[in-house]
Length: 275
Image (tube, one colour):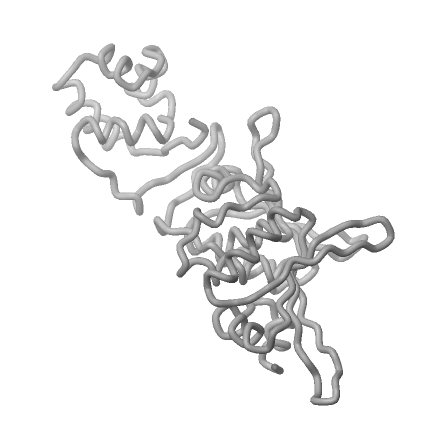
């Protein structure tokens, strides 16, 4: 109930004309379990409808709105146009690595991504823009050269509805097997590394994805196994800081990771090409 639809006056009048030819406004409010005075304001065009109200009105007429025509917003904010009904799992992988995506106590949204690599910031922006026509707030923290990019809060609300909040735990059931590589790519680009160890036979590559939550690390290891990549979860401690690594060391699994997951991060992509 926090995503609003910016519909045209023509569409509003057309939908309410058809609905009210079937039942009274009081009956509509009762069916939608919605406040009658507010629904009256929606009818008159003084209040934007919540997404569920908008879709429910269409459902009462046994109609389906064109999702590509939707313009959405949070209350009193400029609208965002939906460009695609799908959202790249890679975007959520980036959020789960170096991003923030959760609701505040005051029901607002914290939604941003940060990284010191400007090309990865651009990648994040392109992924958002592939699904939403919107503007961003961008700035650089001069202290550590970290770039921050904030999409509109309504985009964050849509992402939370699709993938859930970032709380350190991710459930694999939300992804199909075909979506796993894309999600892992985003996670790896934000929190992953490629190492090379010297041996008698040459340099041996090793891939790691680090995170602070053990349960989350175990779920990522499970996701990797579903696409044929073997990994282990290892605990690590340094200077009082604890974290867990999803470690990919077997050569065949490293090669499968590169072929299936790859990277959009310029330095990590270059390392992948070196193997």
